[in-house]
Image (cartoon, rainbow, N blue to C red; front, side, top):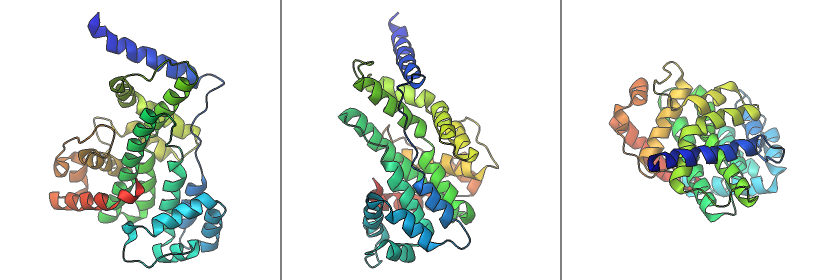
Length: 285
């Protein structure tokens, strides 16, 4: 009977989550579409800087965060940007769009519970690492037309874990769950069910199907060759995990030997360049 306990605990915890999600009191993460709208404008052949500037400056918090990141060490060598317009001109509309998506989505990753908040922050760092990695892979492999989509797909691929953490936080505060489940159990539930819940949440947010499918299928045993975006996110996920940028600590992996690296023709030296890129990206944590 002892060996059945973890499974019984998992099923009980899952039932609480499912019951909450189907109840009228369920409060789900809300997708802030501002960043996506800015990215849509930035991806045009001739983006309108006035439109991008207006969308950013309408939100004082977004404005301050965009300027903070634009003036960070990540963009070292550039003169200080004192206004959103200056930041757009210096960094480019597409880079500003990425920053805007990061800022708007980070608002979801917070909890008053120290334990849940710690996991959310680890998840956020992983999501940002995947976004930067996927975009880097697109640019490095001559797929610049997909760089914006790669960034967004990398950022959103693990949203199922955010949903599970958000629901855990909510049922804990409502006393439906008397105590936070053991960390090992919470990790097991996230590992086993985040793809299903991530797909459902991105569908609920009415996001493009390509992002929904990546959230659902990025851990499938057989990689989806021919789907460049999926392969970018899979390699980005493995890269960040190998560096310990995630929920599980360092997960050793010979990146150059992976199916995904081989798919893009990336060598050990090339993957080392990506690791250096991620080290420089700590401003986004």
